[in-house]
Length: 157
Image (cartoon, rainbow, N blue to C red; front, side, top):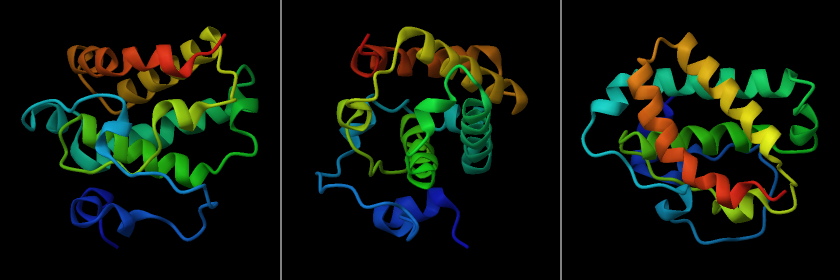
């Protein structure tokens, strides 16, 4: 099996899983990731590369799905696609050399009704996942600062 970072470097389409639900066509563009990547490979190394990012994403999603405060947000959603596109997004932003094949943040979160408390819980789970992976606090904060502006696009009430 090809690691997702290598697959994405070769072609974003290689990583698409056959079990994913179809979505309306959209233009694939790295700008859809919602943030510009860090320069250099320092942050990618700080997050332990593709294996570390995969563990962080999977743990954050698992925690979120099991959290009664926000678990309903995930019901009926394509979790295979979510895991894949979050790994792509994090890899792209962290400077891992991946492309991002997901939709824009506005399109991906349209009609979800994400509230401030929901976003706070998601961030808690991401922080917990990064701590579990042993990511340095300063690196966590730099990454969260890159993600923070997306709040305006994702949170609707």
